[in-house]
Amino acid sequence: MAPTTPAAVIVMAAGKGTRMRSATPKVLHRIGGRSLLDHAVTAARGLDPERLVVVVRHERDAVVAHLARVAPDAIPADQDEIPGTGRAVACGLAALPEDADGAVVVTSGDVPLLDTATLSALVAQHHERGDAVTLLTAVVDDPHGYGRVVREPDGTVSAIVEQRDATEAQRAITEINAGVYVFDLAHLRAALAALGTDNDQGEVYLTDVVAHAHAAGRPTSALVVADHWLVEGCNDRAQLAALGAELNRRILARAMESGVGVVDPSSTWVDVTVELGPDSFLEPGVLLRGATRIGPGARIGAYAILTDVDIPAGAVVTPFAQYDAETPVPAQGSGTTGA
Image (tube, rainbow, N blue to C red):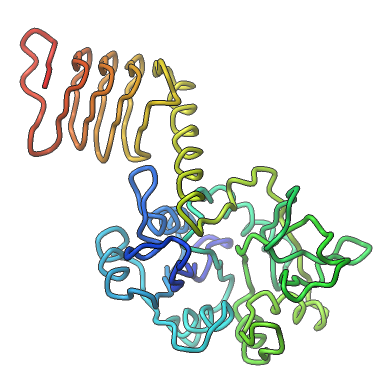
């Protein structure tokens, strides 16, 4: 095990997601070909943690069944009826062995653009500084609704104050808590055992662990991300659409940088799981889904929809063609295929 390998990553996925107005649990809504939760566990798995724990509650059976398909290595941990992020993490910790030690990363199942590289940088800072708590933050123009990061004059992080509990001066702070942390496991266990519910919501706040560490003289710090999309959460349908569009923009930008031709990125949608060969070419309105592979030099006609299919190098798919695993692409006799 590398020195910076976390003892565990805990992904919080117990929320109901009321504002989604959906029978589908919030973390199972999809962008870019993956559920929000699948994006979160994929980023977490990139850290190669000793254990990956997902805290579940709302629609527990559906979420656990989904995990069994996309992340069979994940350990589901049930949150009880006691509310609050602190309680959720305590339930996650209960799934770890009593002798577990080291760093624990805590993240959320509804922050789909957060990537392994950012989590790795956070873990590295935690180890380099010997922190009790290292948190991910962002500076935003409108911090309304977010927890504010309170710093001492020397820049030390001393607390996180939730919007509803903040003073007017604290509400003016524009550095916000992203809800992603690295904790020293021993300190986290001790702090959660000591925390109360003396706040507006009557909940156990995970954010209070920061003030607890500062009061105990333990080092705390924050890694500020310049790219706010990395920490953007999803709470309603509008945010889901915005995050999906931004993810798609990034997928296509990377593809074009690697030599893929895209006529109209605004109308072209490609799942994160799709493979695009160099010099392949996508006409407007193309939808590429699932495990689709586009060979080098292949041309995909306008408004074609391809799901879980393999397009050979140099092939031409005609406009409006639709192929999937059950209706595969026919043999390429003339090099041109249509619906």
